[in-house]
Amino acid sequence: MDELRALSTFIRAAELGSFNRAAQAQGSTAQAVSKSVRQLEQRLGVRLFHRTTRKSSLTEEGARLLESVRANMDGLTAALNGVRSAAREDEGLIRISAGGATGRKLILPLVAQFRALHPKVTFDLVLEDGSTDAVTERIDLGFKAGNAPTSQVVSRRLFAIQLTVCATPAYLAAHGTPTTLDALQRHACIGYRQPGTPRPVPWEFEVKGETVYRHMNHVVCCSDPEAEMQATLTGMGIGQIDSINASEFIRRGELVPLLVRHTSERMGLYLYYAQRKDMPLRVRRFIDFAVGQLRGGADFYVPQAELRALGRRAAQGSNEAG
Image (cartoon, one colour):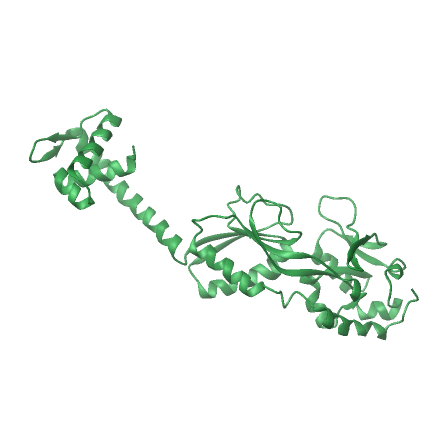
């Protein structure tokens, strides 16, 4: 028995004083109204109406029930209508998961742009560099930098993330410019260590269409990608920085790209979400907005031709024999 529907039918019959009138108001039959009320009486174990062939009137128990549920039913109906309205319109909460650097650099500006168009939508950003339980955290969608999500979700690769070897012009002027992968071993390097792991991540290169990995001599190792970039910007050494963090500094000339032909583009930025038929309109619209704004990653990806042109600045430093 649908108790909510039965209570709604009971209230309508009580207010109109007739099962026939309640049936007309609900677009059903008097028999259906009578059956619904009878099932409710059986569930409660009390009689709610005095019935005659021409009219019905509440028993004392029925009057008490009507007084108790009518105000609550109005509030419940309003709440249900509000939820339906929010699902159809641009209002309500969107919960997003992303890594810390990705959230700060990409998602926060995106949220600001979206809210300018849809001011009734609010956001809760879960910015963590570890894995997030999408079910427990009630996540509507997420962004992942690196490998494609492996869980059972819909995912879209928005753009490639480059791992670019780079250094400041001052470092290259003082220590020379490496022109081969082997030459990197004679330089001070800035490393990255994933949180919770003891060893630095090996550097990743593309060599003749294949991905190869090399361990570097790190003078500084950071467990945060933004700190890794800042350490490189101080001129302490050469870093291999992801393009989300490095692109703006490379284009401004504060970092010089090196060994461009070996730049890895294996990783990417992915948008992911659970497949669901009842996705709220606000979430669907934000997904479409994010794809439209981030596809191709113009601000966070430097094409190879542009990287090569910028890399010529390295020739201003001292060349190191390979």
